Amino acid sequence: MTLYERVSSEIIPSLQKELKLDNVHQVPRIEKIIVAMGVGSLATRKGVKDFAELQEHMERMTGQKAHMVLSRKSVSNFKLREGMPSMLKTTLRGKKAYDFFERLNMLVLPRVRDYTGISPRKFDKSANLNIGLKQYDLFPEIGPDDMKTPMGLQITIVTSGDDKESVQAFLEKSGMIFQK
Image 1 (cartoon, rainbow, N blue to C red):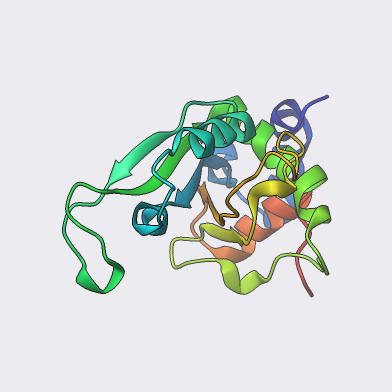
Image 2 (image 1 turned 45 degrees about the vertical axis):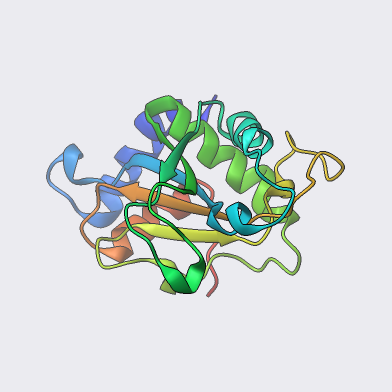
């Protein structure tokens, strides 16, 4: 049984009782997962002008086509000009989001060196979880030999919950490990 099926059949009813919520729709859910990779620094490096490799790796990781975000204005401190590539980004929703979340928890995060769980301080004001990875070669779809340029990855899990405690309870029931 996949996480997507388990959420509707097991996790939501048990969380509704645990959190003492009147309506099923008050239980937090994953609305979308945004996976982003900053590539602005590559535009200024010599010899690296092809972003196709990074785009293909992100498509393998997420199972969805990534699109390039261009900078809107120039920032001289970062040697960034208007219209230059600044970020690769993809947004996962529905079943794809839950599948990515399951792979993140079961395969990727345990491969992080000295992993002891996600810090509860990684939640923002809107009860969304932000995770940063130093290298994206932790994904089983990308081998360490495939990666020519080491890049970081930003993962934002956008939830429908209002408060951090209920969202954290939902994510823990879904398989995410948090630091105590």
